[in-house]
Length: 249
Image (cartoon, rainbow, N blue to C red; front, side, top):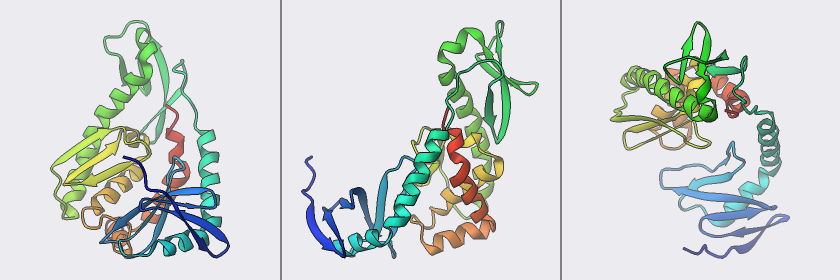
């Protein structure tokens, strides 16, 4: 389906171009997301560098552009931070002695000539069958996915009960630049979330379950998170600053 043409709008000193689902200000393009349940405007800079603005349904497009213009310095700062962190993400080579994360701890890799399984964690080391090195990334992802499903299922069972949330299905998959998602009584986690320290992965669980009560990131949403994780700000900050380090597998 062709996209709607962008209409020029003058706001302050910037020329903005707006369509129903897209907003351009100062050379930046934002996906516009509207919700009847949304009370305030919010700008999100994804780990990928993609930009979005979430707004109540009836907020005029001109107000969206004005809001973005007011936040331009903050937005450009965040974009630069994301780009800098992306460059720091290591790329694995799957060689002897290389470190691999699991629940926040780094385990050295040992290549094994004779091993029945592709990969196992044994005596404090990841043991990878030498004949499987050509597909080592897929082997690690499969291993992480299985472990993540078990670990997150236990966490969800514990926290969903306390948070009065019904969960009918738990999945682990590649969610791109999201750590998790919640919708239709189904909660999903990125397989990379099992690389995080337990207290940070726990924050991801509580964060997603809180969306069962508040689908946006309103003040009420964060109050719900705080009820169950009083130190959520510390955990959230750690994830924002260090989460990129698990991107290089």
